[in-house]
Image (cartoon, rainbow over all chains, first blue to last red; front, top):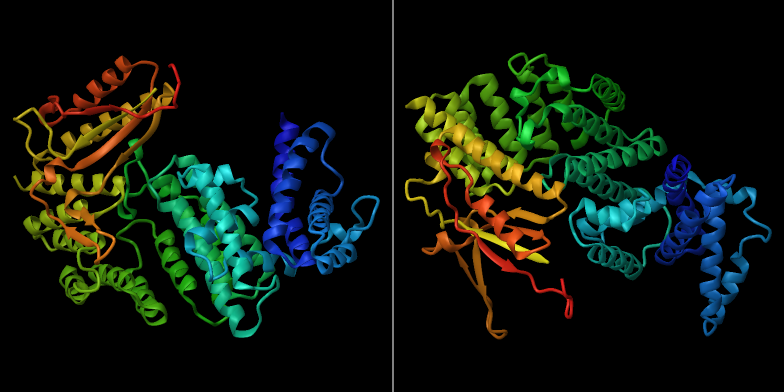
Length: 412
Length: 134
């Protein structure tokens, strides 16, 4: 039993690295991914019984390459490709040394491919989790609460879209590389948020998803140690994940930052996050993830909500607004401004957001919070109720309903 | 056999029960805990397939399309908002009696003063496999 658990972990670790090599060798990512699925299936039936091979990556490369060659050869009408297959056929007599050493660039090219901008976010997430994360289709389907057949189809369509885009299996260069890296970071961040914020699914599955996002960012960070935004994203995730043990109460109820028991926060993750953001920060170029990580760091370093350095947070939101402004950043800046200069200042900053965030539950919730701080209980109750009506998160709806009820009860 | 247990926004037959916005925080918490415990019980017994709550009826939209002109999308609020679906459970149970028993439990969720709100639950069997005998 334990041995199988070991080879399962081994397989998950080895498969993405092997896939990267096979995809580059054959220049066909979609077919390589299919072949790797078959190789993994074979491994899952052989390894537990016969023991894992000396070099799991080499074994997978060998088996998947053979599948690729078989497939290419069977398409006999295509003579040119047949010749290609013959030229690329792995050496006979089992996996050679060279097979076992994937190029670091291959692994990077793999994740860049999976997060290709030709894909919708949902497709990129699914493909990344399977091809880079080594999760099974069933596991991904369970994490997103969709039927396995639906998830299989989503992945297959994603691969077709990549094929149709004609994107070669290689690292993009220059400006394109920067842009593609941004979509990679965005996709990983979405995976993390799904695992951290979503109310769907059980807590364990969600923690695993967040953990997977952190693992992906860690490997990206070790491949691109000099990129400050990769470091920024890793730090942001670590500093956010650190609060997981304190963020929900019994019955899955939501506990906001201000009310969390900070002694439950993971010291270990906070320390690593602080170190990571410090190193990224020292590199000069300031980006959105570094700024968000710095804000998370300011919260994590405060012994209480009141002791929080709101001035620093306000300044950081100001910077973030300039680097990557959007109405949600402005809303958070308004809340920070209220903590520094009083609720009236925050409410004034919310006013210009009426149009861009009209009807959004976060705008109602922020206004409710600031009205409550300002002592306008009646208005706060109706804003909390409006926010509860509009949120699409059940724990948040409950939190807002109870908040409104409590405030109403206090006033009677 | 699978059953879908549906409840709409109205359908509270205990007339003493006002909208949740008039309940105390403790009453809301007790109601939420009751629903959650029922889901946990169904999970433990291997009966829960799915349980979902829907966003408020004010957020609902109706779409009608004749496949010729532009689709007609109607926004809320709707006068019949109380008849809109609020949420559902799908359960996989051994007998219709068990589905009714679960519905009865859901119906008796507590409201103000801990009194059962007598929520009306619609119990519908989900179409099954042709020829399946269970």
